[in-house]
Length: 202
Image 1 (tube, rainbow, N blue to C red):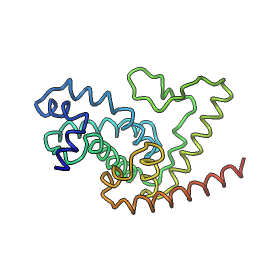
Image 2: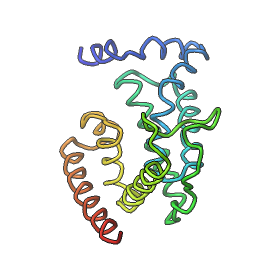
Image 3: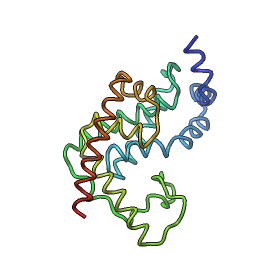
Image 4: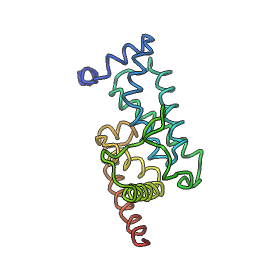
C-alpha cells in the first residue's frame, strides 16, 4: 500500500509510463525538467564543467535505456538522481587526484551558451566587480567541497546544495538516515574549517 501511494504521488508517473511504451517526446519532457538539477549534481561532485556535461548526458542515456526496468519503488526523480550520483562518483574516481579548478574560468559561459545545460544563475545582475567577487567566492567554496572525502562531499551536495530530504539521500546512497545525518554533520564541520583557512589567507 505504501508503494502504491508513493507511485500515485509521483508526478512523473504518467510521463514514465509513456516512456516505457516508446514515447520519445515524454522522455524529452523529463530531460527538460531535470537536466539542470542533474548537471548541478554532477558539476558540484566533480568540479569540472566539461566532465559534468558528459555525466549529465550519460545519466539520461542510462535512464532511457533502463526505463523499462524502473519499478516505481521510489519516485522517478530519486531514481534518476541516484544514477547521476553514481556516474559522478565513477567519473571522479577515474579522474583520480587531478586538480579541477585550473579548468574553471570566470569567463566560462555557463549560463548563456546556446544549447548547453546551465549552471545555477543569479536572479539579479550585479555590477561587474560584484559579479567577479561572487564568482571567486563560488570557486573558493567549490574548491573546499572538492577537498572533502567522497562520502562527506556527496551528502553535503545532496542536502545543503540540492535540497534533497534525508529519506531521499538515504535511498540514493543506500545508507541509513542516521548515517546521512552524521556524515552531513562531519561535512559541515570540515567545510567550516576549510573556509576559515581560505578566508584567513585573504
